[in-house]
Length: 224
Image (tube, rainbow, N blue to C red; front, side, top):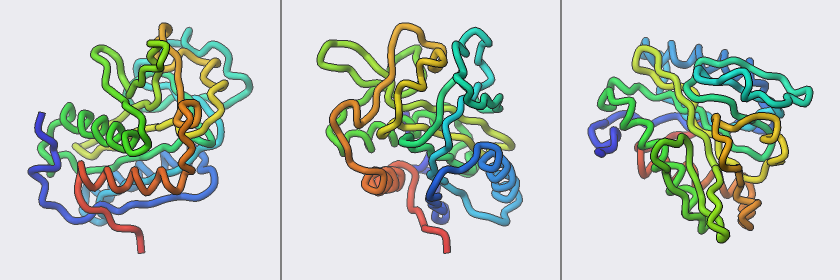
């Protein structure tokens, strides 16, 4: 598979990092506005890295019985692909708003590039992560042979502009995942960098995330 970035001599992608916890509704509103601006040429492409307060989201394929116990957390129905997942402190969410029409107009290649980006970022911390045929997300194999999910991917595309993106477990409270069937997969659990004994801190993780994004998608520029 050829990276969509290889045929994309584009301007720099804006890289935005939000401190604190960003409410989910405002994040979605911001993405919707930015997608429209990218489409009409009034704003550059954007990667937005943030954390949310604890919440669950349901993608377009989510089944009601996969919400086991919301535990008082808000549940948002969203237009991204995929099923149920959790967001919260200690999980790095990166919303990726790119013009795919200028990058090969290939959604499957785009998702493959997102996977490669996450895998390469985790490798910087000594974690060997992989795709799994027939399963969404990014997976690691423990020394016991058990396979666990460390990152989720869920995207939406409107007029060839992508949004939503990836969620990587850096050091979250994994207990929240017990309230759902994560991504509809009963047979396997979830893990994090911290659970695997890697504790880089979010700033170091963000630096690796940005560097590997540039390796896959091209140059980034911090907002003015």
